[in-house]
Image (cartoon, rainbow, N blue to C red):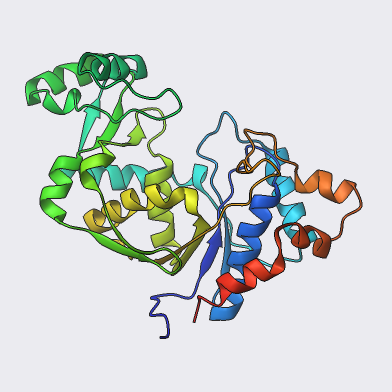
Length: 294
């Protein structure tokens, strides 16, 4: 069955907080080959809302690596840091819909309340927010907003679930998913000092840039649940998704900047060519995934 996409565009959206590694290579090449197969544009987006960790040297490294990989992209590159007004506007719209509320809790506040409730969070996981500030009265919120300098805007998942009901989305590889609104929690969509989050900016940008097919690692499936909610609430275009397998190291650990995975820069320095790097994750694996796009 032929895919029914509202657009044939795909995208690669790295954060310039470190050098690209083999996992980035797979993701970029797969998205690029998907765009060619569909006859659409391959769009590069720089997700640099984390201004403290983002660096120009890492951004330049992304361009160099893509050129070395012979990946051609649209020269109209969107830097998220230059479009904060778009994200502020989206938050204001969600405020009008009464789908977000200000949260004044620190991370330690959240953990303390969960502990009191007898549900200790795992240290390696983000605890589900218990809704402390959701229960504030209108008057209490106004008073806190007048004196607090640090707060976040949280999605009111209870209000959203009442409005949306059962929400379902499909993945070309992983199949049908029902959004588990009861276990998502009231995620942070923006902060006072940074008026967006990964969830809000990525979802809004996919709409603005007319991304019809989103290809990304399967570790982001849970994020897609949140993105679907935002799309419906803000009446945004909804792409089709394909979450691909992650590239793992010899110990079975996901490649990441945090684990200091070997970078493309170091692979090039060791004398490897493009085809040698592709062989590291297996060209046949990418071709099998591309066959899902018809």
